[in-house]
Amino acid sequence: MFIANELRKKNIAEYLLYMWQVEDTIRAFGCSMPRIRREYVEHFDYSEEQKEELIDWYGNLIRMMNEEGCREQGHLQINRSTLQLLSELHLQLLSSPKFPFYNAAYYKVLPFIVELRSRGASKDESEVETCLNLLYGVMMLRLQKREITPNTQHAVKEVSTFIGMLSDYYKQDKEGELKFE
Image 1: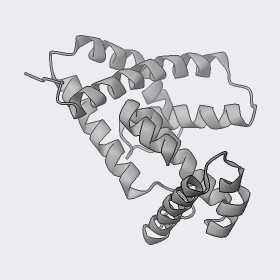
Image 2: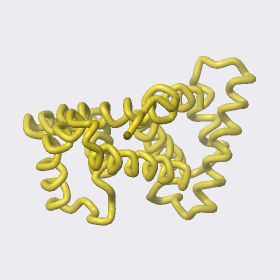
Image 3: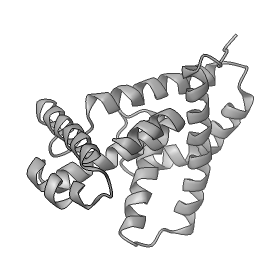
Image 4: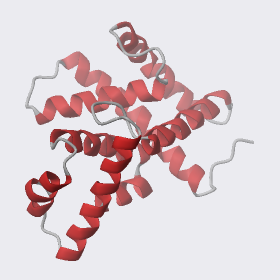
């Protein structure tokens, strides 16, 4: 919760990746609040008040996951809505002549997006979601200490740069600093 709040302010893509990890963490504990409290939250170096806030947060997320039918897979509506906003901004940036560097970065990662989709990425997901899925997948591979091929490392580098640029524009837009005209 504390990390999520900071990331949401600083970098929306990192926030989404973090929240996807939180969803998977909840699933790893069987969506069980007693287990999350005992086996996860208790290991944090937080005050008792902070731990209680964190437990409430996880409890709310579990409730939402149950209500939204994403106990086993998928993402919470709050995360899907954030992703939708990011995808809409992506399309606005692409359609505006004021952002040539963004367009150049997009066309640099487009071959990776096409390749990922040809390998089974859902055709229904946005290009931004495809990019985030790549980053999340590689993050999971690294946590498992699995090998990442040089080609994948190159794709991650380019996609990270592109998504970082989109996140910066998102922050500017939320602060009212982004002008399309």
